[in-house]
Image (cartoon, rainbow, N blue to C red; front, side, top):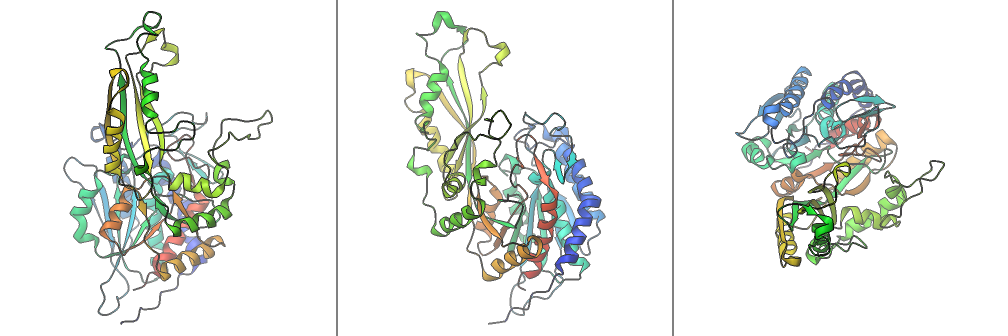
Length: 491
């Protein structure tokens, strides 16, 4: 067997100083410009091509990357007909591979599309109004996930400036992630020969348990979405005339949803939507719960406050930290994220409405098949409708979750040493409740690759909601940590 070459040494203090200067001098400004552009994902902007915002942020990111003049870097905006564009960049290896072994590639991933505006922003903030305050850059998309492109390049520059040899690096930046990445797989197929033998994936689209250490995401939930519609009448009628005889579409909606969810506990009823938690993930949940404790549920913006402004917590589903972690990472949960057929309060007259429609978002455990779940939802919700109402479920798609592969010794050591070097604490592991469709795709395509799934979405960063922010001091350290891990990847 050929011996691995020793990993090169990256001077951590110099790397952090360099990336910090770049964040302060350029990246924050670039991200502020990015936040100001309403580049909503195509699932939220059907006319994205005509509006041109996605093309603008892609071109801006590409222009910035090219302006960095990273030695050897080549970049292309790849466009397939009818699909959102992707950025693809490549940096050749600067160190020799072990003789007789295939040289491996690092794949860096991010996305530039955004969630919609949402309501409830602080009066001096807004989704497209960047504000930099106390180390936090507020606005939609900076943390999820516009920063990843800029941080990835800054990490490569840190390696280059110290002349630390590195493996071949490619970058894949998409613009459809918030819509389920339905455009991504065709690009992966089209670029497969250019991706190479991927041995390490770096995805900066995830979260952090706190801002005090590096956090590795070890699992992601899947997602199944769709619109459930209950129709009773062809038009609205006087509620005094018809109520008591014509059933309320809202009551039928509640009845139908009771097939799916125990409304008293929130537990999803179909057994097929659950899976057994692997033993290693359960052990990690116990370790992480010991670190984060009650901050796992105290970090949310609960609505109930006492007269002095101190938070009086609405009772969460559980106050047990281990159960809290498992509930948000390994158990299915239903959310109603939108509604139709309901007039605004100011427009609500005494009318029995003809229909009620809910947008459903079902978070699925990492090992549950999303496409099958969508099919089961349709059958469960549509069969044998109460009162012979017209009940339809229009599936909006599904994305599988992800369970990380077993870590190799070099990867564990590199993560922990990076966390110690830049945070002064050991690397933590945590499952996330969100979905990154690419990770499941990459695990299937590159089953032996190590997956560095990290991110800046720590406590109160509130991705997708009001007052979303990017924690810049954490992002600086994460950028340097990425450079450290790449340097430690075996040749």
